Image (cartoon, rainbow, N blue to C red; front, side, top):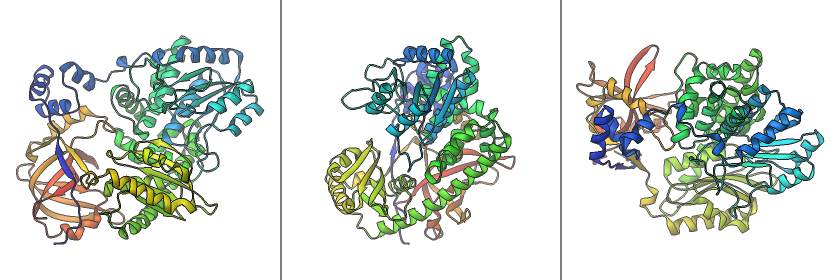
Length: 580
């Protein structure tokens, strides 16, 4: 049969057997769970216990954040004198949740506070001079940035010239030369002089910790504060795809618990719009449901819709905004599907043996979508991609995504003579470029990638926990595997491999038959000797798999709950067989 699927490389993760046995013995847990903990670098019973029990009392002292005390003192002064405060957020899920957290917290403390989140096209990213000028006109005395601001030295200087103090709260990397804005306080765990024990907070995590410091500084209940705001912090943390380890793990674990019973009307309406009412909320529901709806606001329309739903106290407004975000997310999906189709049509014209960096462009591609499309290309073809939204103005905007073996920001920087602006990090970046330079940019990027990437680099790798007899995956074991949740960046759901699994049936599912549903025959697994194995977004393989009797499977096992019924299912990640 014609081969239409390129299997990924399956790499078995090693684990120290002695460490596994110690953790299994001292903590009394299943040996497979102990092995998974060791594979995550948790090689002592003490480290494993901290991971399995992410209690709130293990949160770090917020006053260890750089300039935390200075920020609290300035905020105390602003509260006491009734100064007008302006919050400046960002347009993504992290930015709007952190802006909402700051606004809700300060209003609860009696502050005179307004909030601004930028429009992706009209305002651009980060604090700009026109915002500072507007703050001056509005009589603002204190600006607080959240999820932005760490590199805006000129803007902070201008604010100071206007007699406006600034508190920067951010989690992005400071300027390479180490310079910081001359603000009253610069609260960022990535500062070189930071003593904070954990660097990888999201923007909303920094907001949470500084607001907690302020709560403590003013003598209020920290427990009540956490119960009120960990829901927002969990959403922003998951949506920003920061590592779900250490303090982020604590924030998400407890934030999801508080989210289920949240009193925020907008969040309740949003959960209902996602179909999550009366369900236990997990990180996947945020990353696949809530997060995309919040992000759809800025990708398609106005960021403020996402902010307003997090702030509203009116039931009718909450319902209307949830409906609006649903509509925008549907439009985002439609736009993304169209652009992906056009992008892969362009790729079909290329020789992938030669094309190491895929630079794709379209004159009807929305700028808010191209990052998602670049990510999908990287996921499918495992090579760096730059997706460019051409514009009638002649200035195009692009998003780049990359693989571990290629620092896309360094490559972009080497083309800076062609660019109007650029920024980002090793595996995700953005840039602006004049349309007339796109062809030369594509040539250079591919030349740079070809010089550093081998054929092997361009084959995706899946890290596999172990090869297993699928009959060992019982309800009890899968329940114990959930003790490793919340799953996400740096703490992925474990993948297992089972060989020679019989395929009883293959069919398509989804509104547009975009997914596959395989029925696998596994003798002894249950009374039916079968298990459902969905393979998402691979409906294109229906003909290829129709005549295959058995395959090796790489998959995530979990417990599916649907219509009040529970069943084990295998979420397929990849398949392979020597003869296929």
